[in-house]
Length: 411
Ligand code: PMP
Image (cartoon, rainbow, N blue to C red; front, side, top):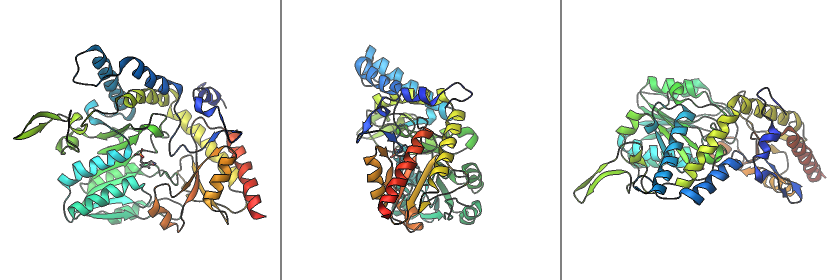
């Protein structure tokens, strides 16, 4: 496939060494991108280069390697600022991923600024990472968790959200794109309606970052969390964005080196943002390599990403929906390149194992969204999630493999 920009999927694929292997005697087809996407050579090279040339602890050293490591680390912060269009570089906090970002906000914002009787709203399609931290906060503070219901097609209705908003709503934390269903939520409307009652808003952008341009100033969210490993970057690095004034009003999350200004046994004063939230030696190497992932996504651009992923999604619908007993789970109008499904009479784990035998990697299970699965009255689904290096030919092979497996089960 070739598009107007001159970028081709074949060229993109060449940048991903891991894709060029056989699994169980078949060419690997990797459709588990919503769990973790693969990394291009540029990210691998950045990681290797860092360990071969620059490895040192950051910020406090005056020797050359420490300066190089610090410069590379802070260059990623600058790149992340540009990537999500944050107003200031200090609004970028490095975490190990989306889960840590949300836990940081629930504890550092929530324990200070949310109290008994206050209300927190999430949706019924949240990942456990955007449920459990709020449940923990509610237990600690006596706040109440309210949930926007999910309709049969996997969408939420704005009227249902409005009905939950009260003068007690202090926080709204919603997923931008559902990992289980692919639903793209109307986050701009949610943010403005939440702000109208004075609530702060966090956007879980773990699945949005690889598919959708993020502009925190335009969105006007108070927080946004994402993970590097879902957007062609390394594991163990994530970004938490927070508006300066909100981050400054918060307590630190963890204590340790780097997050302090002065320590004595009589008391401690804290560092400025973002360092106030980065206790201890961070994951320097992966942060440094994450810059290459940002550059990879920016180099391709969201127009291409979107266009190609929609081609894959449409091909998937065309080829899969007709398979005997195929039941898509999540058919929202505005949907990312994720197809979650069941096949009547065949357990999702069996499908996953038979597909793996044919070299096709999909995810099976509840996808860390158990309440959503309960809502649909199912234990889990099979999920095929597509990335920029996937091809329509792979989807055709997948559909043929699935058809064959289902036939075998029907005998
Ligand atoms: N939210 C969503 C929507 C996700 O898909 C994930 C990862 N599956 C997370 C949060 C958690 O991300 P991480 O495991 O990188 O912390």
